Image 1 (spheres, rainbow, N blue to C red):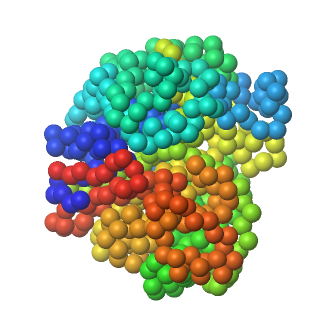
Image 2: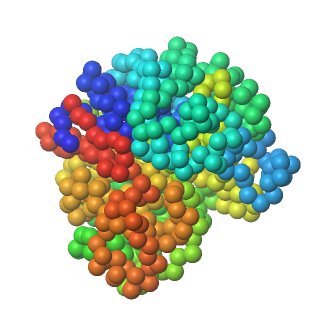
Image 3: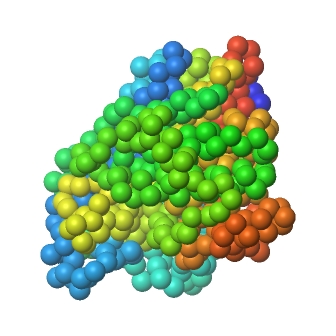
Length: 529
């Protein structure tokens, strides 16, 4: 979709409309993104909620890109000894109160984003930005097809987690039908308290007190002191130049390095034909090279042993390119990380462009819904290891590895693109597929997102480590990939959820206006003013 004054794209139509309305009333792109982020935390609760983390890339009218890291750390009581006492010797629990082991950072990120919005002329009160979210939580919204499907799939493993059934199943314990009205009264109260007392109340006020008390009663290792100590931070984004564009990404603990590496490696492979064997094989092999680096390097920013920028130099990228066989697949027995997330983007005619991502990690996160606030807690801490020699060992105060990674690009002709997706391990792969199609091969924006995709390794919805191709994928290319040594698995659906929900917003130079799209695999879209 194209527009002249502003654009917003999200994976749920109610969140898209919340952002569009803010733009129509004169709000800037950051304010629109905040309104959309709050709304989608209510109407797409299986993918994100107030108990998760978030990451922002904000490009200002002068072309400078700022980054906000809103990733919570492990609670003071979250030690290997604590988990051994609870019977977990080798792996951390994925669901329930013990899986809720990190401070939710998302609201702290909203606070810094709100400051940025004001710095660029934003005048909308927080109450107005939270208004759509409060209304949907209070009066109800229709259950999406995605929520219905994933509630059905995960009901058995989550039904006994405190608060889950009360919030996500009906009075008879059944999964709500698509279109059924869903309400979150406690969450509405919490959102109202946030605009009355300010976003900091989540950590250091009444909301923080209630969250901490509920977590303690449930048995989580996150304390009131942990909440009070949390602050989102501003950092420099990662940056790399390709032949025809520049890219910005989120630094560790996210896998933003992987997205930038994949595209930088692929750019040097010299592939000429889009949607060919060389295109797909090249991106897959670039993904493998990038993931090998990512898994060795990416950890809490404060604990880094290597500067991630060192892996984006010309010499480093050339080494990775030289390791790729244009005809054969590198064997790939690799453990991948699942994840559920939302990406949203916004832009306005002043030149502000926002790429934002927030998540509770797995579908429904830990499953723990806190009774006093209605907050659904993430399970991001399960990406820690109980092995003290691991790259990401569990330690109080340490931030876990994040699959989340928003992207920003500037093309040689002046276009600016905010892009991103959900999908855990698939996020860098989808980002690279979309941006190679759009920025390197000139595909229309909607087609770049909608065309059949692939996924190497495990993501949400599938435990296997194969190279998965959507059912609509070109059969001839699939055969070529198999002959090259890729372990192929054809997904029955022509377009599958497991490939992630991608989106992008484009600011065109001069009077070219704005453009946006969101994945037809999601329940959302793009709207402009």
